[in-house]
Length: 255
Image (cartoon, rainbow, N blue to C red):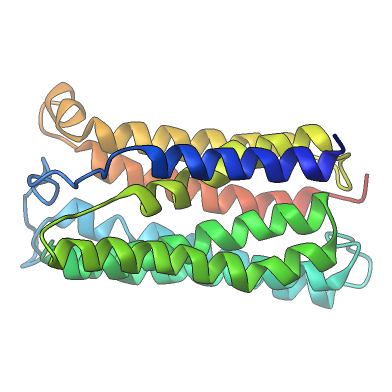
């Protein structure tokens, strides 16, 4: 079995395992976050305001791409076309900042769908960047629109299922799970084309930590004596992961 076949097989197995599970309903209490304090007339102050970090990280990444393309001596990209998927990623991060802040002002499923759509755009674009760098630029760019559409369809399916009273999170779980499982396999199967590849694992680790903070929203709020909730820290750490991607591009060189 060659590398491409092994990767495709694992992707197929992962997808099958997710959809062989029974439908996963979103908890009724999902929108009831631990920290509901307001400030300056803003409801859910920290959960809302912390989204400015996504705006900053996304803007920093887009600005970095512009500088890298203008600097002839900088070799962040062996093939300049690779920057396209990164541009979509950082644009998605900016959208997360707006959509997540809008959601936290008045949490409900409709607003959450927009938040998750922006997240799906960022997840799938980052996945495409890794495919472009590890498999081929052509494959990564060809799969970019397919992955983005698949991610958005997963969010739309969940939103539709909620309106039918049979909420099903499985496609959304796959959107989040696929990059975290498949990117490490890509790194294992394909040689690095750039330096500082540990940054990729740092990005995955930071997002995994962000998910843990989210799951422990109330526990973190209790442990900190009501200073900050886990969901706010999720925003902080997830935005740090996006910043780490931009930092990686500024540091790396062709291997």
